Every structure is written in structure tokens, then in C-alpha cells.
Image 1: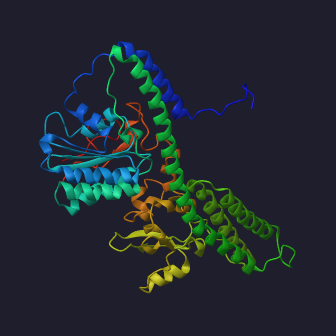
Image 2: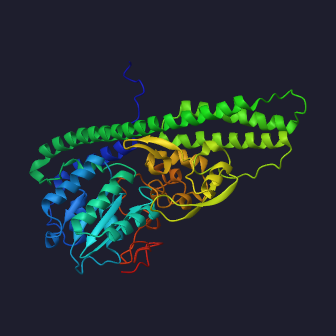
Image 3: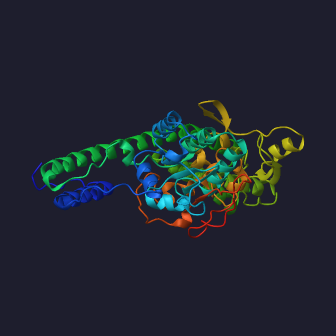
Length: 454
């Protein structure tokens, strides 16, 4: 390769890091001695940038060091941006603003949980976890009760499984030691070594993210391939020929749309490189099934079907025909769209035929199978009703709208990314400090970050 050959561009996060390291090298001669750590939230924020769990010495009795270390290891092993602080009820930690101020001072997008005195609350960037999800988790933790360790363990366990994004690079354990004027040469070496180490960390974080996405896509591929196969079998059973006697232009158009949807679904799934891209596949399948239902009505002279969501219990059942009342085990009753067969089963006191998918714990209905199935459900149920349909289920707890719309690519920084104070406070929220079990907005802060009770 010639010396003038074009070199690949460095990733933008790495470019920013290199620029910061160069600036640091230029400032080494004039670096003052390190100041003493400030008190209050500044101390908490500085600690959380280095480790996911901080316990104020005045609240050490609430969470022993061994338990704090266990929580920190759990969060790091999950590679998720979950921050936990155990603080005393003190003037420097006002309940109305402590979460918003802590997020601003730490400057990293993520999920923030604070045990303040005898109260517990949490908030999150919307791109990391939906406000509904945080509120549900906070309410569940409060209603379960227990001591500080029990509450935080329960929250971390759920948050680490549902939060989007990655652990911040600052948790790698590399600390800033500060430099004097006599340390320029040593400081320069540290800058170079720091750049190499940061690039290695960037590569490792990206690799872990790609591995996670590949595993999620592999799980989705099994389910989507079953959907595509089922739709192909429906086309085979249709026994329709565009040239048959009685075929109309409208029928041929319906048939063509169904065939196009089938081919689109196959090509989109073959090209999918990330879980979020599965949304387009299931959206095509939904369109194709509605075209088939319309064609069937035209051939029999029945009224044309209304454009409705697919059957909630299994989208392979085709478009729903009515809304029914249903509740998941232990959950509240809600209205969901159902096909005729499932509506009849429910009316007769039987269980609907729910779509089962494989999980580590064995077959489960898709709504209890975890966040990987959010794009799959989003393509089928991509409307404002979806959160209401799934509330109280594992998948629903992660959604404030269609699950795929709240992905990191849908707006806002990815979990674990450094933003400093430059973030939208309207997109940071979740629970409330009220003793009534979750819900409500926060006090203080901007936008919707206000109004919660104690």
C-alpha cells in the first residue's frame, strides 16, 4: 500500500477521546495540584463515575461493604449503565432534586437508583429505560418491602436485565492521578498509554455489544423464520390463481400485495444485521396477512375486513376480529385484540393459544420472554396501544411506546455514553418518592421532572 493510501477514519467517540488526550498533554505543564474532593453530590458523582455503587459513610449501616461490592460486580458483569447511591437524609441531598442533580453531575446516560434515608426512588434516561418501566420497578420494589439491601438487590436484578446500553468506560478502573510540572515526560507517556488503553476499551465494549446483539438476533431469527414459514403455508393453501374464473382486479391486487409482503419479509430478514431491523420483517408479514384476509372476503362475498391489529396472542392467527378482556397471571385486566378462535376460547373459560418462544427457562409466551422480542412485537403492534396491551408483563415493563421506538437509535444518548450536563431533562424520569408504591413524577428539575409526592 502506498504511503498516500486512504486510511480508515477513526470512530467518532475515539476521535473525541484523542482530542481530549492531546488537550491534556498541552495542559500538563500548568496542571495545579489536585484539589480536595468536594462534599455532597460532587463526591457521590465522582465516585459513581468510577464504580456503579456508592455508599455514603453516614449510611454505611444500611448497605454493608460486602453487599455493595456484590451489587457492583453484578452491574459490571451485566455490562449495563445502572448507578446506585445510598445516602443519608441530609440537607445536601434534597429529595426534590437529588436524582436530576446527580444525573447532571455524573454526566452519563443510564439508570439512577437512590436510597435516601428510609426512602427509595429511581430515574432513567428515556433511551435507556422507559419512564413506565422505571415507575413499575420502583413501585414493585417498594411494595415488596425489605431492608435497603433487599430493595436495591431487587431493583438491580431487574434493571440490569432490562436497561439498554453498556457500562461506561470510566468503570474500567483507570484513575486520574494528577500531574505536576516535573512530570511532563511521565505524563506524556501516560497520555499515550491512556490512548491505547482507551482504544482497547472501546474495542472491547463494542465487541460485547455486537455479541449481545448477535445473540438476540439469533433468537429472533428462529421465531421470525417460523412466522415466515407459516405465512408461506397460508399462501400455498390459498389455491388462488390470478387467471381463474371470477378473479377481479381487486383480488389480483390483494394477491400481489400478499406475495410482495412474503418476499419482502424474507429479504429483510436475510439482510437483518441488528435486532431492531426485525421490526420491518414482522410489519411486512402483518401487511401480507391483512391482504390475504381481504382477498378471502372478496372471494366469498363477505364484508371486507376492518384494518386491525393482528391477534395479540399469536400474530400468526391473522388480523383480530374483536377486542376481548384478558389478564396475564397476576396482572390487571386489559382489553386486547383477538382472533375469532381465541375470543371463543376466552368466552368459554379456556386459555388462548399464546405464541410460545424458547427462553433459558423453557418455553414462555412472547410477552414474558425478555427485551429481545420488543422489535418483533413492535412490527406487529406498532401503535400507541401496545404499552397498554403489555402492561404488567416483562416485555411491557420496558415500553413507554412501541418497544422498538425507545431503542437507543430512536433518540437520546445510548446508555453509558458521556453527555455531561447536555441532556434533555424531559427525557429523564421514572418513579416518585411517594410512599404509595410508585408512579408520579419527580419534584424539581425541568419538564416532566416535577410534582411527585413523598
